[in-house]
Length: 359
Image 1 (cartoon, rainbow, N blue to C red):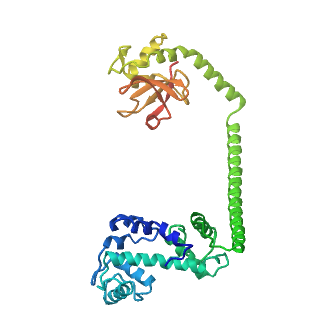
Image 2: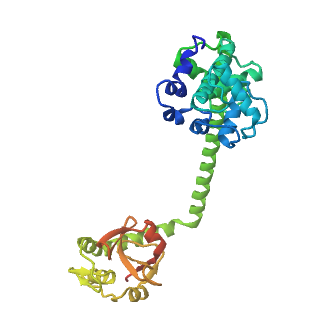
């Protein structure tokens, strides 16, 4: 019989509750932590069979001290003998075969075995326990799904957390008060160590980021003199002023449908769109993408009103648009007609050839 204090632990475990309320096949997937699914699904094992289900059967009979030979996954004479002894001791039909009823009884007995192990240690669990006793606690907590660490005999924070979860859920008292104080100290020291490590790592990372930022700022300062920056800013302002009307016209045509060879608001292709926009500003430009590429002047970075070129359906410049600032450009594409695109989009990044300016 189960100890009154711990009976609820077994009865609230997934396996036990399913076994007393559901058909056998229903609870196959509910076994906590230890994977006995193979054995439960087998339902019937007998002499001369072999495989994983036999191995699990041998292990369980070994836990229950009915089988002490090699775990070899072979259902031989010794396995059959052990099974008959178990069946005889539990009032089952002595057949030497692992039928559904026998398997369920073996599992129930194993539950009681683990409960009994915990009962023996109840009230005496503490960090200074012998290693073999800690392993028993870890095995039991693992069996019922509270502990998922290594069965290593080390009573650390992970084992303590599992004990606390079990105590809290079932209102149990497994640890003496003196032991609790030691465990609390151990837990606090471990937490402090982890916090300190994280703080040190964050400090080192912040210092490294600051060093990189300072180095980058220093390099940029050396590359650009005050006069160069002023000249660049002046050119951008001038370009923006000169091409404001170009951008306004381009924006006004957004939504115009695409037409191969089109060069009017009834329909545009990419070069026809650009040519039309510039002609409204009394600027004559070539008709094709390749001719515009050869006609315009290259620039390192596009300014508002510059042309941006791409390599799409054929080698070399085959698509183009008008740069409108903020990493955006307006172009006439087959999918959406005249629309706004972004140079940062992966499609355009991979096909971008450069920018040029109409003087």
